[in-house]
Each structure stands twice: as structure tokens, then as C-alpha cells.
Length: 204
Length: 183
Image 1: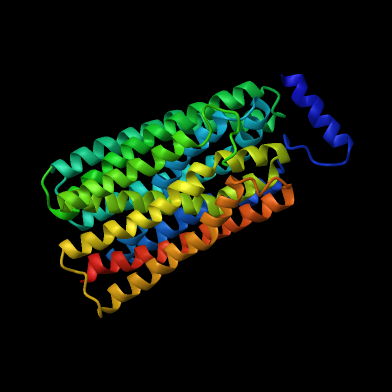
Image 2: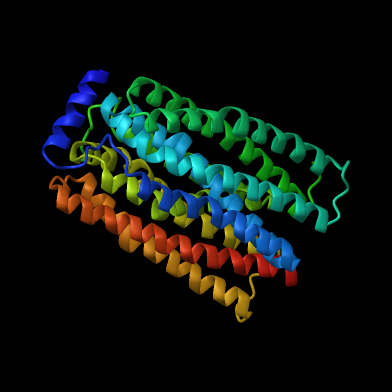
């Protein structure tokens, strides 16, 4: 399979066009770095100005984006990938990975950090059931995100940097991460339920 | 009518799943008039809808444009459960749940500037979806996107529609956060 990709790749290069299996790193960095910096930059501003409205707003928007992307990755992109041929899966994986490598850790960290500050601003007791359940789920998400999802993305990224010779590995790790996105989605849906309990005053 | 991409039963099953599950959840929450369920349904659907629009509008546009023609054709078809079904359904159910939630909480006050602004922007969001994402997805579904240039143009409409929706939704969330914090 690998040689097939390489043959296709070289034939496209010979014809003077960039192969669909190649990624322009200049473009990726220009897209990826702003995507990773914007949430963190906005979070820092929100924390510096110490305004609860902006803090709550940022937490809601960042959380929405994170949850929506996890659903999209875990359900819709996974559905798309399952219907594609292996070489087509590689095309998608190679274009998704660098962006997801930069953006997902940034949006996840920003959302959780803002959530902690919202909880502290609302003076939710540290040992209340809301804080405890949400805290356990947040820790689980951090563990999955930073100990499994992110290392997988880094491995894919390194593989792509080395010429994407092992395409099976790229597709396998991407599919694992898509399944992890579905797991993260379930955890996020649970944490939103806890927030709905808190917002409506219905006890857990 | 709807093309089968040759994989696992085509569009019918995923379309049913992404339509029936959120619709059933919203209807049950409204029928029960349970404030927790309606709040949860509204927030969750709204969050997912916004996140998908942001992903589509900001990230997926690059993926779609840079893959090969065959992959693009397949992706456009396999994307239909999201663009033709889930996004339009969410764009109806989220405001519907929001309306019932506002009613139950006694904050559906026509004439209040925040409520009026929410109604105007929410209407714009829904209209954007039904003027861009839905019709272009329908054209792709009935096979009017086989030419690559046309497919790219149709998908550009979908992606730009999603981006506009995302911007409006982020504006909408600011109004809701304003209500929660200051009203």
C-alpha cells in the first residue's frame, strides 16, 4: 500500500502539481498556530480584566466549540472515514491532524481553565457535589486528551514530517483519535448535564 | 433519488439517527415541561450546533478544498447526514427548546431589548441555514454536484453559511450570557 502511495505521490510531483499526500507546512503553521493561540490569548485577556460576564461568555463559547467539534469528529468525520478508501482516509487524516494537534489542546485547556474560574467566581464550594463530579470528569478528559489523544496526534505529525511513509499508522491512529473524540463527547455531555442541574437549581 | 455511496446502507440510517434522536429528546423535554431537561436539551444542542458550524466554517474548508476530486465527491456525500439533516434539525430544535425554556422561566418578554435582539439574531441564524446549507446540501443529495467545480461552489456556500451562522451564534451566546449575568 505504501509503495502505491509513493508512486502516486511521485507521479503527481513529476507532473508539476503538489500531491494530495503532501502537506504545505508553511500553510499548516500559518493556520495551526493562530488556531492554538487565539483561545489562549482570549482566555488571558478575560482573566486579566476580571469581568465575570466575559469569563462566563468565554467559557460558554469555548465549551460549545469544543463539544461541537468532538461530536463532529467522533460521529460525522468517523462516518465519513469509514466510507472512504484507505488512500482517501490518509488524505483527510493528513489535513486534519496538524490543525487538530494545535487547536484541540488549546480549546480544551482554555475551556476547563475558564470553567474553574467561573466556579470559583460563583463561590461553588470545593467539596460540593457539583464541583466533585465535574472535577472528576474534567480530570478524565484531561487524562484522555493529554495522555492518549495528544501523543497520538504528535505521532501522526512526526510520521507526516518524515514523509508519511507508514500510512497505515496514520490512518490507525486517526481512527483511534476519532473514537476518543466520541468518548470525550460522552464526558462533555455529562458535564453539561451537571451544569444544567446547577443553572436550574435542580439538585444532583 | 439520494445517491448511495456504496457503503453500509447509504444515507437513510445515519439521517434517521441524527434527526430522530435530537427531535425525540426535545419533544420529550417539552412534553414533560421539565425545566432541567429543556435547559439541558437547549444548551447541548446549541453547543453542538455552534461547534459544528465553527469547525465547518474555520477548519474543514481547508481540508475539503485540498483533497483529490474523488475524495471530495465522497466526503460531500458522506457529509450529508450532518449538512442536510443534523444542522437544519438543530437549527429548528434549539430555538424551539429556547422558546419553551424562556416561557417556563418567565423571561419571554417581548419588548425587552435583550429578548428582542435574541429573537432577531436567532431568526437570522435559522434563515442563514435554510438559505445556504440546506438547499446546497439538497442539490448535492439529488446529484447536482457531480462536476467538481460545481461541487466546490456548492460546498463553499455550505461552509460560508456555517461560518456566518457561527458568527451569529457567538453573538447570540453573548446576549444569553448577558441575560444570565445581569438580568
